Image (tube, rainbow, N blue to C red; front, top):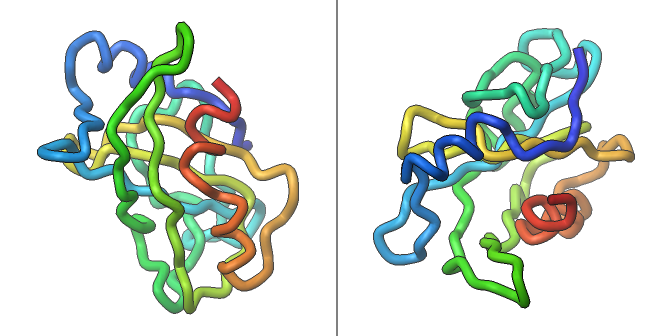
Length: 148
């Protein structure tokens, strides 16, 4: 069981099928869920997240803490744009202000369409500080187009 950084293969196909709408006005709701390793997850197991991930799962998700609850938090969309030959989208930073979390990865998923997976991110550091530090490192732009 492992967490890897990847844009989900199913998401790439679903883009061509017009399943995801990232527009600020009238777009879908996207959430960010956080995941632990080893026995740190809600179910006492590690999540398996990567390119083959197709939907949001609770296995290995971090436990509820403060403002963090099952399913994570809703991301605030920013309209898609382009830069040179690259098209991308972004989200405003998300904050779980009263949470104490130990996380090693995250999943962004489409909560408006059967919880379809978008992308996974593995943190190369164990995040076990109060969430203000985690959230400062988890801006949507870093997760979505820092790697792809």
